[in-house]
Length: 109
Image (cartoon, rainbow, N blue to C red; front, side, top):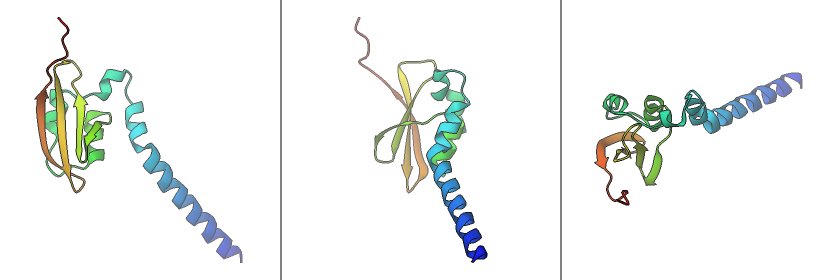
């Protein structure tokens, strides 16, 4: 009876730990940043991205989550330039393509 109770407690702890990790894995990465702009990407971080990386690996490199713009496609703003974004395409959870996209139409001058 005690063994069954211990097994149930351990299984519950494992399930709660997995759930907590899934919920907070991205939050923990973004919490490392002192400033909000650090959650964006820069050219050096972009150059470190390689085909086959998972979304979590890309988030770790960028130190922040991207914005999902369509299924499998995320974008990160540039840390310095407001005129470009970094677009990353994932297929089956793996990085398949990356590119720098020039943004247009934001100036009101």
